[in-house]
Length: 113
Image (cartoon, rainbow, N blue to C red; front, side, top):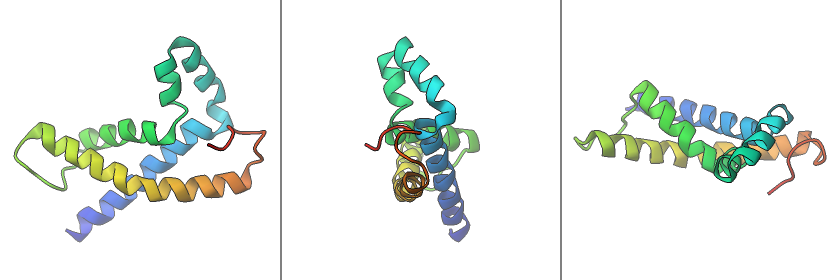
């Protein structure tokens, strides 16, 4: 049980770092602009850390077969596991975003939400 919790916390930190990097870093600014031109929905997804964290968490849950809680339904196992991971991601995202905001001047990255 402790191993599962530690694994979930590490995965949550990874999802948070990925989501903040893709949605806020200068490195992905052109990708975000391209996505907004192609599809407003895709553009919004790549500009919102919280939105992207759902899809990143789902990829990790399915990719690693993480099921911290099993309810004997594959769909609900993955759904609940994804929601648990997203919930754990939120504090990590907040911390990373606060550190990122201090380090990066506002004109270099995306404006603060």
